[in-house]
Amino acid sequence: MRMHRRSARRDAPDASRESGFTLIELIVSASLSLLVLLLVGTLVTGALRGQQRTDAVAAASNQGALVSDSISTAVRSSVGVTSGPLTSRGQILLARVASLSSAAATTPTWRCHAWYYSIADDAVYTTSSASSWGLKATSNPDLSGWNRLADGVTLIEGVTEPFTVQESGVPGVYLDLVVPSEVGRGTRIQKTIKSQTIGATTTGAPICF
Image 1 (cartoon, rainbow, N blue to C red):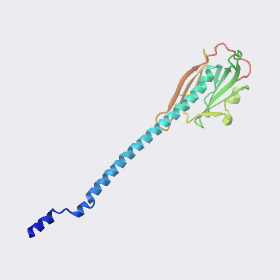
Image 2: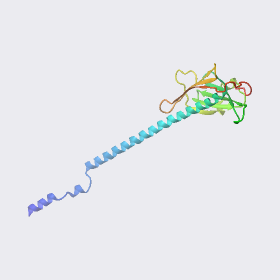
Image 3: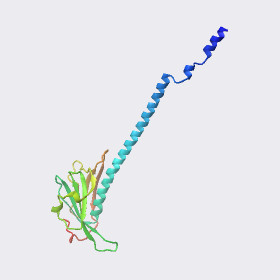
Image 4: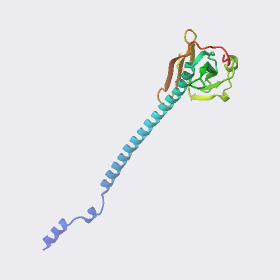
């Protein structure tokens, strides 16, 4: 009878073991949870950084396109292009641009367009006017009334000026600028733009330069 009771005690389940987790099980569970959180955090951080890089490159590309399109549109419709020298402040580009008031119009109206690369601001500005200008009045311009096209604009080492006017043959200009991004190398604007208004008069009002 006594032997039966002892056997029953040995076969009885340990209530303390079934009532919860052991310390080792809790440590393992906590370690696994921490590992999962670290993995998720790494993936989320990587995704955010990737999005930031994409946004930064897109912003630089958009600013570069804005500068390129502004100059390209005007120079292609111009009959005269000139630039000032690159000074300690920056460089100006000027164009006398033709436009038609309507599809039926045959006589163009003229506007003076200008762009300025500012070394102090690392920016490119633009403006236009139907009034006559003079190069002396605009080679060192007051930029308060100009539109800012791009920020953070720089020149690549070895480039002597952002605007190089082609004097011979068809009027045109060679652009070489860089709009950097917060990550990566940024966007380089490097292109030659030619006038498409061959034979148009360069005289008359307004006098742009």
